[in-house]
Image 1 (cartoon, one colour):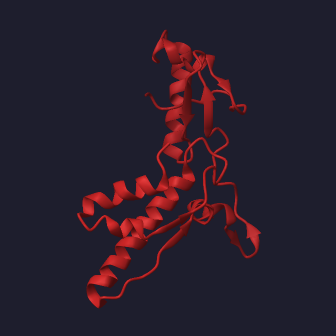
Image 2: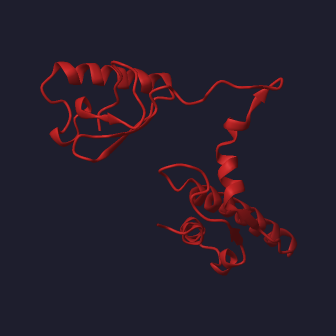
Amino acid sequence: MLSSRDALAQLWSPAALPSEACRAVVLTGAEPALPSSFCVGTAAQASIAASALMAAEIHHLRSGQLQDIAVDMRDAAILFRSERYLSLNGVPCPEPMDAIFGLFQCGDGRWVRLHTNFPHHRDGVLRLLVVSRMTETPWPKSCNPGRLKASRRPAPAQGLSRP
């Protein structure tokens, strides 16, 4: 697994600015910052740190003054999921995730993630699974959606876009 410090260095490298600037950034916390199959904390912390570091470098070039940068992984990860904490007039907003969004295991043990939070993605998923039940093999045999075992139960006749 890539560390936040290594991810920051990779994000910083294309800027061709002094690499020692990255070493001055204080990164605290550890994965898992949030329950996810992705390293959300690492991605959030490294990208926020890279943005802050670039702003600090611009400030340094203009003023000669250095700034301290510290990014906590849990804080960064929560920021990346801030829609979960959104309310309107004190009332929580509706669930942002579609009912069939999720990670599903294929019959061969591999996994597929259904991204259905945008209407056109959901429509594509619905079309494909309906087609997959009517045709012999629109999917690679090793990952047939008809053999998906859901980590949470999908709605009937749902689908995903072709890999």
